[in-house]
Length: 249
Image (cartoon, rainbow, N blue to C red; front, side, top):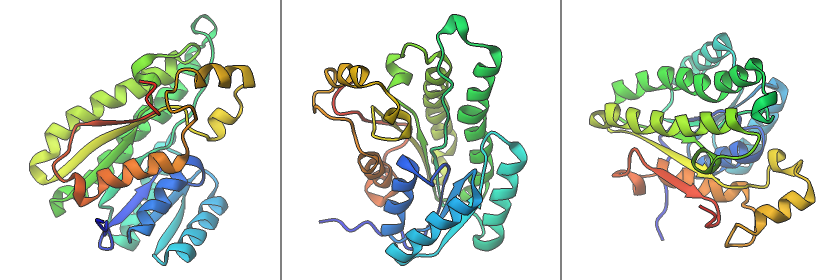
């Protein structure tokens, strides 16, 4: 078997105090990377960072980070630079939903989702790639979604951001490839997280009918895909989207 070794790498995962983000942070840590765990709740981020450090035996850092706030992004990244000199691996996972039918969706519902899911990714990446360019090595993984490809009722705002992240990923991949920086995306399907936990049972069953594997995914299913894209096994992959959806798309 291949052994993925990221022991000389530093990673930052946005929105990593729970769900997919936490699983990604844990997988990167198990591979040896030191990891910055981030979330809007500082105490929670520090708690999760401590738990990962203890279970994986790596250096971690818990940071308050609201990707919808420009100053929060700058302050959090400045802290990482101060302690670790920047990051080698950036996983843009943080995102929100404000689901409403289009005719009931206000401009504030639209702009808030774009600010967090899309502009936050732009700002976070713009800071991280500066160090990657100097080091001539880097990995950026953006979390898109199956609904960015299929669309979904009540998610015009969310699906638009997840679709836009694909264009962002493919364009940036072309710009950074010459410096040995890969940029890829992972598009999860329906994963067992807080976002899907609130679905009504009849809706869950309806979704399950369209998943050939017959189950919702687990955060670990997505984390494995992200780890692969950050590893030497994916050195020749950039500008790609890896779908993790049980065969539904």
